[in-house]
Length: 172
Ligand SMILES: Cc1cc2nc3c(=O)[nH]c(=O)nc-3n(C[C@H](O)[C@H](O)[C@H](O)COP(=O)(O)O)c2cc1C
Image (cartoon, rainbow, N blue to C red; front, side):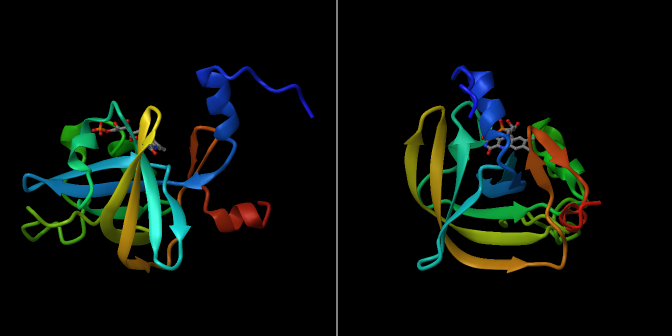
């Protein structure tokens, strides 16, 4: 076993980023307008009752939109959606461009934003929030969840991996 890295921010990040995750876009509505950001800190917590969590950085502009009672959608991105992951991590004005949401031809104002073409969708309500240091941990009571026949986008070592996971498993 190595002696380990010092626990400075970048050393710690390089260690925890070896743990692969998927990538989600967490959405809600605030004052009738859609809000959403890219989030990899999504984790399932409990099967009965169904609970999941995600964490939001205290510096995030979207943080004010999330509190106990907020309805949220966790859009689990598919392997061909790295552009959506970048879009919801960058300029806020560009995030809900035409074609990003399901049903984007209809009037989506005020509706919970669901992203088109995802691998899975989890919808629920924030039932609790906890101090998570420089992040806030949101616990979500899941009300609906469904998945599609698409492979998830993967994130590890601070990189988005667009290659479908079945090809990783086959060792290609
Ligand atoms: C792959 C990826 C994963 C991310 N995961 C998280 C996360 O779990 N929590 C978080 O607060 N920000 C995360 N971010 C960063 C936010 O998406 C980014 O800071 C975004 O601009 C925040 O938007 P806002 O300031 O409008 O809220 C992630 C970004 C990327 C590219």
